[in-house]
Amino acid sequence: MKTKIKYTKYHLIALICFLLILPILWILSANFEGEKPSITLTPSSVFISASQDITVSVSDIKSGVRKMWIGLLKDGKENVLLEKEFPAAGLHEESFKIRIEPKKLGISDGKAILRMVARDFSWRDWWNGNKTYIETVVTIDTRPPSIDILSRSHNISQGGAGLVVYKLSESCPENGINIGGNFFPGHSGYFKDSDIHMAFFVLNYDQDTETEIFVKAIDQAGNIKRAGIHYYIKRKSFKKDILNISDKFLNWKMPDFEIDIPPGSKTPILDKFLKVNRDLRKANYKEATKIGEQTDAAIYWNGAFIRLPRSANRAGFADQREYKYNGRIVDHQVHLGVDLASVALSPVPTANSGKVSFAEYLGIYGKTIIIDHGFGLHSMYSHLSSFDVQKGDMVKKGEIIGRTGITGLAGGDHLHFGILIHNVFSNPVEWWDAKWIKNNITAKIDSIESK
Image (cartoon, rainbow, N blue to C red; front, top):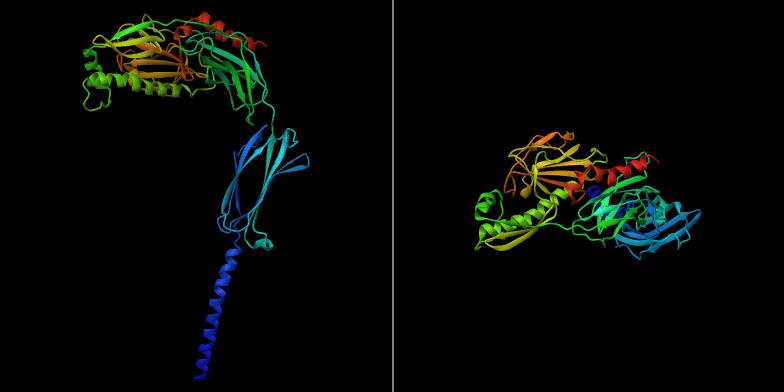
């Protein structure tokens, strides 16, 4: 009986000791946690420009952030960018925005090392905490790239296209020509020298002679350089046209469009037309120009573009259209192509060689084909009745790609032909003119190749 009591007493003592030791063990295990702090650098670019903002984020979910240190080592000299200690556990994440200005720090261009160290409140490493140490090799680059304009003459008409050829002193992820705030990307790959780029561009029909034009390049460190070009802008007047909209036309065409009209409209079919002619037109334009922003780094085309054979002009580029219904003007739009009419269901040849980038129904344009001719130059064929090609097909100049028709908002069988450069429509008449192409495009390219 005594042995049993003694045995029970020892168990009770052991249980009490265990219960006392358990929270101590829990505290020790929690404070001796081994998870290191996390450090994130934004942006992750390894280039530092003349004035570079970086954001360093540190986090430690378990014991909290104790210390953060950041330094920049160059030519044996270490510049402390940040040194901060936190008084107590509880802060689990923090971000630091740091501006690095190499010249103020006395740092020259070239390779450097960005060091980042963080510690937490763990009791490990003799109560100094878990440590994260990161070294990143960075390039100090405070000099903007240089731009050498190689094409010397740039004669541009309102609504017309042009080409600029230039050479960069270094690799620049973003480069091209700015036309009144619209940016046309430059492309390398045509010339043997990869530093030589060329950019097709358009002066929009509504941009005047005061439009600011310059080549712009941004290098990998973010340094920006601009260079002006010699240019002459020729003013151009565009025709005004009145289109009479009849009930017959509206009753024929409006059922093709799934457009909701607000209830209670007194003129529902006219209101539907206006939504199609305004809102859907704008959406279709955005979709077409988005396609135009995707292009191959190659020149597929050669020589003057082909016009629809045996066709007559029915509407010109940038015609200022007024839409009249029951004797009053109800809308204004601009026609960004050339309408060509031949016999019904005429075969449509591709204007020049290229790759089909779009062959689908496109709202007011109806069945439409867009062909990429390379380096941002596209041709567009709309209101077709049928397709003979599909997206991804390579087509040769003169190859039949479809038939004319009355799809979309067309009032009669015709082809709406457009030239799209990046995200702006250009006057197609220029591209039918072999002399214009030679003087404004190919002569510039040939002059570079001959050097």
